Amino acid sequence: MDKKEATEYLRYFSKVGCIQYSDHCLKRMAHRNIQVDDLLMVLMWGDVQDVEYDPEYDSWKCRITGKSLDDDDVTFVAAIDVNANAVMCITVF
Image (cartoon, rainbow, N blue to C red; front, side, top):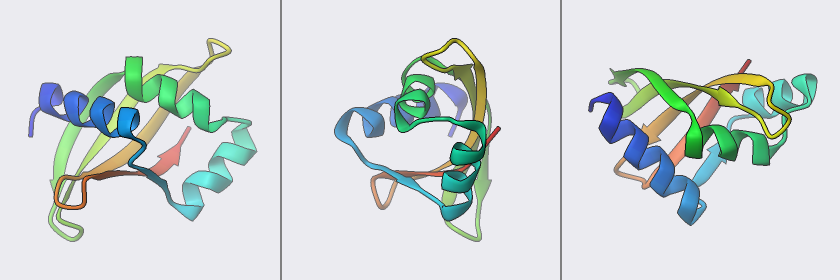
């Protein structure tokens, strides 16, 4: 999967609400005061920086950067699981 395809999957899964959050991601969101809407903003308008296949989870891990609703820089790592039709937000910083 390349960056363009990853971007298309991320935006599609965001639109249809197929986003999951790891416990670690939820803790980091609370710590940094990042809301779900901020992550959705990054998913819809951010830039995919890199994509790599993760054979352990049979998914594509990518790093996305963008701006929150308050115009703060946000970077998060997500796993695209094409077979499950979902995105798992792993961490945010």
